[in-house]
Image (cartoon, rainbow, N blue to C red; front, side, top):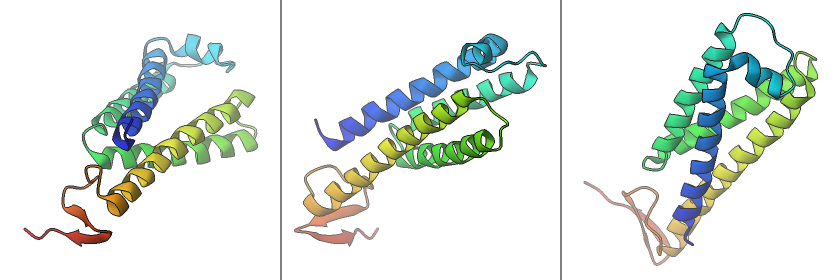
Amino acid sequence: MNVRAVRHTIVTLVALHSLLLGAAMLFFPTRTLHAVGWTYDGDVFFPAQAGLFLLILGSAYIAGLWHDGFVWLLVASKVAAVLFLVFEYLLGHAPTVVFFAALLDGLMGLSVGAIMLWELRSTVTSGRDEPARPDIEADAGNVTRSLP
């Protein structure tokens, strides 16, 4: 299995996670929150809005299968999610499940970030895989930029 195939598999799994959680939050906000241990009996507008946001992010992650910039968006969004979730947990504003959600988001972000760096490194050093960017070519270990 080549590096790009590994990246596509990981990005697809992360996208599915966001799409499924987003759909659950959008269509069944109270039930979804209760299922993960969050006691919530308030207005469903904001939890449903979070679901829509997750659906949009999951769709952007899928776009990352064709455009690397969206993959870096995935990594950045996971970093932001981890920081937010950890601080909310530490401040006592969220139940324990939020800490585990932060760990899962961190694992997803680290996995995707590591595979992107691995792919970039293997492209630049070996020249065997397709370049992550079409304007970069590896030539016997020397990196050159193609000019238009």
